Image: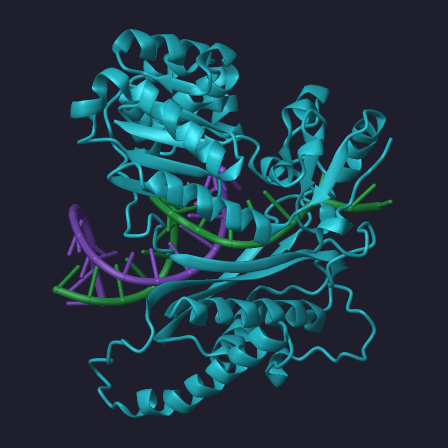
Length: 436
DNA sequence: TCTGGGGTCCTAGGACCC
DNA sequence: TCTGGGGTCCTAGGACCC
């Protein structure tokens, strides 16, 4: 049996936890750049503010109804998230922190004692989290992760359930499956939802009844097949466990949208170099070295040009590295392979993967000369010193010449836009409010 | 005028090998 | 030089998630 605990409207709930006057009002939280709505209170949802809409589109509606918009405060959300997760992980034999606001609990082994009363157990979980953090949650309990997600959604949509939905038998499962639209099933996005509707499949119950071969053919191969089996109650997905409840990352990505379209190679490179520098810092902070580096550029999906809107190029590094200079050199060469003059780029970024613990690199069997490893050491010391200075005095205090953007130069065209933002958000007395 | 950022997993197809 | 079938590995891209 799995439980999925999901925080309701998490970012908005975090803001409310420290500002009770926001209760009962339409409230949204915005993404970086104040670009999109990424969290909505129930009142904002009721107004018709859609998830992910550009803020400039949602703003008039919000303002008409006295709504409030907040820029993201990731330090606050991260802190509250870890408090919630700590409380939850203490209540089950195993936990998987699935995202900042969701946690799977493995209830196998507990069910022997709790079987008659799993709903009561879930109710106590909710109360405990609410007491400890002021964050409201919903709990779905079912034999598979996919059904637990579905149960969680039913719990959210059915007030009479008081935030808990337990699919304890076949009858209850059938009841839940019948009321969930197929596009709300975990793993069904826009493309698959469209295809399913064309075949007359509109509910989760209908999806659970399709032949496995059909699912394999039309829903991404084994992924779709697994999805259908999970809906039928056969577990195919295990808990992604680890000691502290968080999964080991397999890749790491730093990317940003430009303030405006960029065509010049050197301008794209300046932006990419800052992202590579930041990615290398993250890599060292988690004590890893990377074997794979991929850079990508994107053009606008909204200006009518035909796809593809993204190009990428990767390099395999013969020895894992966390060295900024090495990664910068590789990234620049990779960018050369995908950059095309005349293209109007809107975004660039870097992905690092193929991790191994730093300092435990495998020797190359064919070139067992240890000298390159020895030579790495002074570089590692330089990188550690650089990270120390930047941590102490602020990001970007010290940087490599290859990633240098002259401070006196006019603001680069790729810089993230801030015109729409009020000057500061860091303090509670500076929260941005919009009045009608 | 203004459309986020960071992840996971899978597949198709090419290169290469025996 | 001819060459089938099957395997592995890698890359690029797609679909999905929060």
